[in-house]
Length: 132
Image 1 (spheres, rainbow, N blue to C red):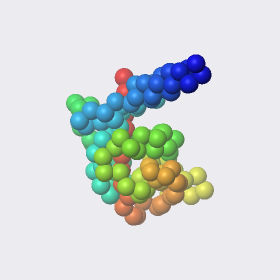
Image 2 (image 1 turned 90 degrees about the vertical axis):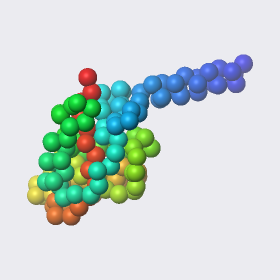
Image 3 (image 1 turned 60 degrees about the vertical axis):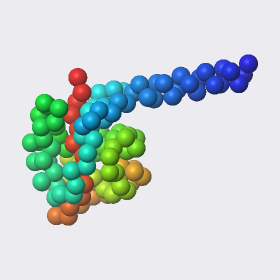
């Protein structure tokens, strides 16, 4: 009886995890956090170019894409297995690195490591929008 109850609970857990994320041809939707992520990896770019790229992105007839802040990108690291072409590299965030506001936080989507840079080097970008 215990084994049956445990199996049922595990089944419910799997269903709830699967229900929280859906993958389309262009995006990954995280319904738990009301976020829609760009599926493809557009490649490496400097920070300012990443901000501009996300701001100008038109995907699924939506134009409200943005470079995610540090907290949001850390949520995205839990979805890394759903994104295409994700390698253990750093991604830009829109959050300033507080000790030196000339720098921005970076998040490694595979391992969740944090870093920062002054925007002069190129790192990957993952755009996000609030999902209605």
